[in-house]
Picture 1 (spheres, one colour):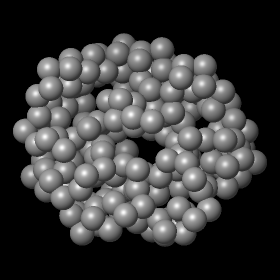
Picture 2 (picture 1 turned 45 degrees about the vertical axis):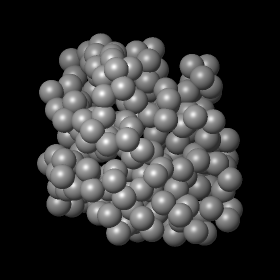
Picture 3 (picture 1 turned 135 degrees about the horizontal axis):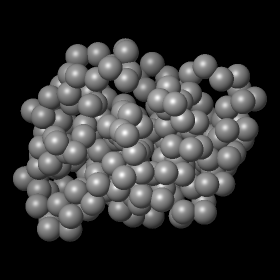
Picture 4 (picture 1 turned 135 degrees about the vertical axis):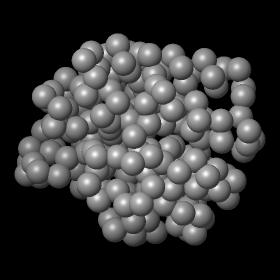
Length: 215
């Protein structure tokens, strides 16, 4: 699988914007997004599995990848394509032993990124800009910090943290393979239109092959 071709705009579902996970997922899938992450901290495990199964069905209909945040058990229960792990989640080496799908790992610096690269299919890097969506996101790493991570690893890098249509090119210019987005789309007046705009910007830029850093 050529994972990079799915990573242009990586949407993370969030039920705090007046829509369900499924509603947001369907809107962005119609707009051209081809990778969805289900992130949920409040549901019971049973509710998570039921929601994840519905999201799995949706993503399959659009030939998109489905990633579950943190919960390998939920990912296995719904036949997800992958899991995404934070630095405080299950250690990546153990996850790799029990899960043979895609593994993404969140990182904030070069040391974390180089350690994650041993087990990860892609790396999440950020937060790039200050974000209110994830309250424990920590100190921003900025464009410079992103560029350092991109240079240090050979696996795809997805940037995250308050990325939107106005700053996405700054992120892409230092070599990020994709951008992970929540509020820029979910909080927009029309999430589907905003997702479509962001997808078009990213794909147009990447189609020109313009990148400061080749990987």
